[in-house]
Image (cartoon, rainbow, N blue to C red):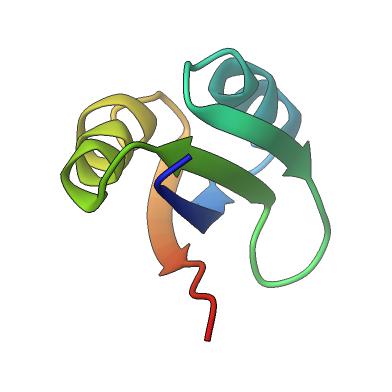
Length: 78
């Protein structure tokens, strides 16, 4: 796989489990879990390139109901 990222997501109150389940069904998402802390859901995603990853985040993840904010953290191998 080309690029990987973690997506940290804040949701509306009480929507974390619902958002994690919906995101977990998207192609390119390898992990989606609701958690406690400053973010409500943590997602691991993979794509062939950065552009494809960006499309996944902007058009598919951010468009889901219940999401209020996302932070995408690309994985780098140094």
